Amino acid sequence: MKVVITGGAGFLGQKLAASLQEKGKLAGADGSLSPISEIICVDRAVPGEQRDGVTYVEADITSRGAFDAVVPEDTGSVFHLAAVVSAEAEADFDLGMRVNLDATRALLERCRTLERLPRLVFVSSVAAFGVAPSIVDDDTPVRPLNSYGVEKVVGEYLVGEYARRGFVDGRAVRLPTIVIRPGVPNKAASSFASSILREPLQGKTAVCPVSKDLAVWIKSPAAAVNDLIHAHDTPGEGWPDGLRALNLPGLTVTVSEMVAALGRAGGDKGLISWEPDPGIEAIVGSWPQGMVTERADALGFRADENVDAIVRQFLVDELGRSA
Image 1: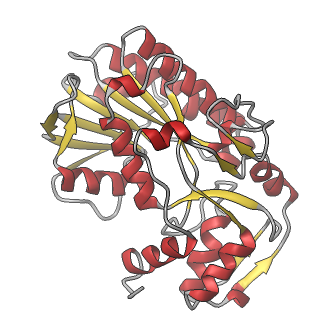
Image 2: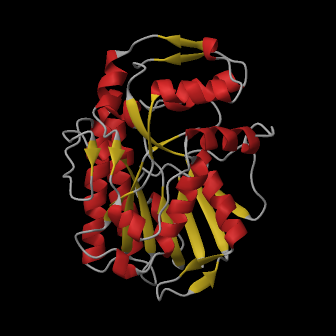
């Protein structure tokens, strides 16, 4: 089985590729496990450090026919992670539409032409919600309040429609905010949620643009990767037409609770400077602070234990320290 990961050079894409290599198998169209013959990571640039046994392809997925060249005819599975993140999509409307919406449609069209029905996992976001209660459930309607959220919701509907028509076996999962992301801050509105932990744990300064009592819905990178693979391998009856999008379980934590966990892990809380940014607070504040995820729970998806466990995992996995 050939597996394509769009956004495969990003941190989550690379972690997914590593996990798939270790796993070695994925569920095929009939639900039985099939050996993975090739993992193809597609992105606008190849990573500096490349994994042996993984194929990396540099491509502009917004260009006409891009997916014809990078998604082989015998592809069995696709993980669509590529996206322009929240604050960047809000700042550059046209770029967000090209990458988050037009490229998603183009990828679905390519999947429609493949030799066999591919299984596709579309990565959506908690940003799909906007006008919603602070705690949402499986039946809460999506009413996004920013361009990124709108593009993700439209992507969910497209995946559902292509699945209903029998063109793909599509599944869309709404990820919580991923904490702690390695590397450096990106242009996501929620980037602070990682940086206020990541930087002080390495003796560096960080800026927090939101209030201490803001609550966010979070998930660790490792748990997110596990959920993406689980979403792929879950039998088709768990994804009936009309229910192709799923809220994933996570943790509700306030910024102050995250900072407290930083201190318990030995990080210097004094390295955080508090510089309010009303624009960032408005975007993140429009997202749900938590979810009741009965459907995902029943399908076997799981949240992290607590925020301290997430911090300990980062110390071990990314910084090579003992927890």
